[in-house]
Amino acid sequence: MPLSFASLGSGSKGNATLVTSAECRVLVDCGFSLKDIEARLARLDVSPNELDALLITHEHIDHVRGAAALARRYDLPVYATPGTWLKSGLKKLARVSMIAPEQHFSIKDMDIDVVTVPHDARQPVQFILGAGGCHLGLLTDLGHVTSHVLERYRHCDALVLECNHDRDMLQRGPYPPSLKRRVGGHWGHLSNEQAAELIKGIGTEHLQCVVAAHLSDKNNLAELAFEALVPLLGDDTHRLVVADQMHGAGWQSLSRRHAPCS
Image 1 (cartoon, helix red, strand yellow):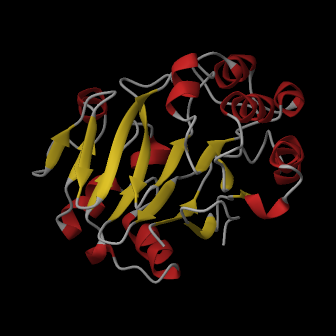
Image 2: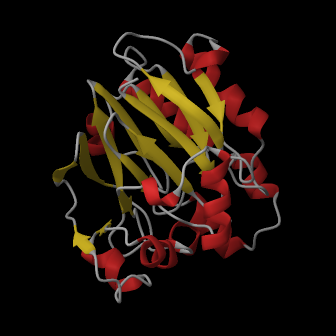
């Protein structure tokens, strides 16, 4: 398979996504402790020594908790925007490559596009990763869907897409009003409904697979995210996977022909 990926865990307590091609393995974010991330990689039969790089989307702790420790222990190059670098614990690392929003670069046979997103971080970005003619769009931690995001992700073969909250659950839930405004605001996180609107906006012609990610444990349910998205995928349940905090989502493989996740 030209491109495969798996979520090591996704939610407010930690996020990490492993993406592999024929020649390259990268970890996007490391929101778990070093011990925990090593165990989660082992579940996927991957050693940290096999990683080629660590990509960071932004500085929030659920995305960088173990990043510095992992990079030091395994001498990994880290790719982050200057704003993320300044606000995270990455400043003392020896191998940091600064990336710019909208930049394109490659690591071995993997092409990487850096995409600007609206989120309440210093210089947040998301990534589109490609190899072997397939493209995976990572798209979590954004408060609203911009026309720029729709255009950039329109031709992806798979998405790891934020479904952070159900709007009704958020409003009825335990968060204080200020946090509810932050989560549901223009610089917070996508709701199930917003994720569905994004899929409608980019179309499903190319989509082999969608992984619903970054679900709140207080303001969402897996079945609500599933109900919001699967009708847009022709009610094909094989094309939708919901990642959870503890186990993430297992290996998904893309191919050049239109096929469901496997």
